[in-house]
Every structure is written in C-alpha cells, then in structure tokens.
Image (cartoon, rainbow, N blue to C red; front, side):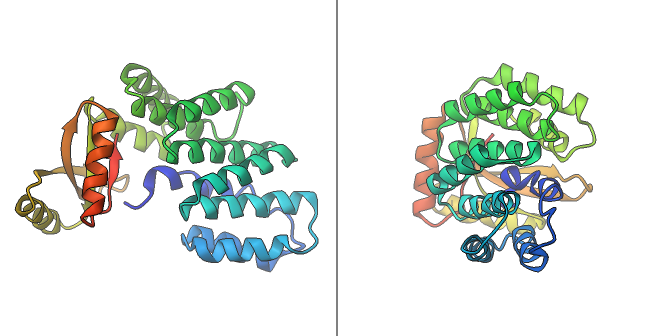
Length: 255
C-alpha cells in the first residue's frame, strides 16, 4: 500500500493538466512517469523541459510535476518551494488548487501538522467550489488526526463519506473512521496473510509485539497490515518509528 494517502488524487489531478499540445510527447512522458511512480524520470524530464522556452501555462504545469517528483523523492523542503512558486504563478484555478494541496502535503511530510492544517483551511476558504474539495477535506482530517484532535478529524471524515461518497477519499475516510484513538506504527501490508504472520513472528523474535489488522480495499480484496504499538502521543509513535526504521523496517505512523 505504498504512499496510498499522499498519491490519492494525483490521477484525477493529472487529467486537468497538460492541456497544451505544443510539447505533447514530452509532457505525456512526464505524466506517464508520474502515474508509474517513476519520480526520478519525471523529475529529469521536467527539469529538461523547463530549461527550454515554454508558455506560462506550460511552465506552471511542468513545474507542478517537478514539485510532485521532489515531494515523493523525499526532498520535502525543495518541493515546498517549488509548489509555492507554482501557486504564485498559476494561471488556472485547478493548477492553483493542486499546487496549494502540494504545499499542504509538503508541510505534512515535514511533520509540521499545524502549518499543514492552517494551509488546508485557508485553501478551503479560498476555493469552496474547488474540483478537489474531497482531497482538501481529507488533508484537514489527516492533520487533525496527527494533532490528536480526534473529534474534529472524525467530523470532517464523516463529511467526506456523506458528501463525496463516490470518491477515493470517501473510501480512505471510512478506513480512518475505523482507526482507534491512538497511534501505531505500521511495518508492512500484505495480500498474503501468511506473509503478515511471518513478519509478526520475526518481530517477536526481535522483542517487538506485532499484530495484524485485516482490511478490505475498494475492490473487496483483503489485505493484512502489520502494526506495532498502541501509543497515546505522536512523539512516542515517532520514537518507535525511528527505532524500527533503524533496524530496517519501512514504517508509517497511523492514523
């Protein structure tokens, strides 16, 4: 389930971009690289195209793709700066909204949840008729969860489920509503239950109590998440994540 929470909405967003045909082949290559999550290639292609002459619209669209690539390659501060540049220069509402969501994502991934929440709320006030409302609401809910503002988060999650029932964000919101009011660190997610059980045993041998959470995706496919801990504070979850990362496990803090 790699990067599920943050990639949600990119495919939808991409459909609003690349309206120009002047650089069709190259921009299509960038779009394809992003959809395949080949962000190194997308970054390289974006940088190459930005080195040549572009219209303002083309430049904004390509720079947005560059920012996405930077974000998912872990260069969060650099991505933040690029997203802000797109926001300042955007000549369309959709591009402005998506770049603004990128700013929220960058702050979120940097662990600055207060700023992520603030920026998402500002965007919601600015764009109450945005084509990306369900995504904006989900960003608000996720930031609230990380700030242990459980009631506010659940209120927004229920709104997503009720008002955007057919969206990918509604499915994610339903899953988040099932989460308990504590933090846990996920170290694996598998379609094969035996692989999840094997990881739990491996963790036990290393002195860590792992447990399996069974989930179902939007297509009805079951998968099994392996998690550790039921922690009351985000700081404790961060310390556990660091400990598990140091011994080689991929880690995500939930919710």
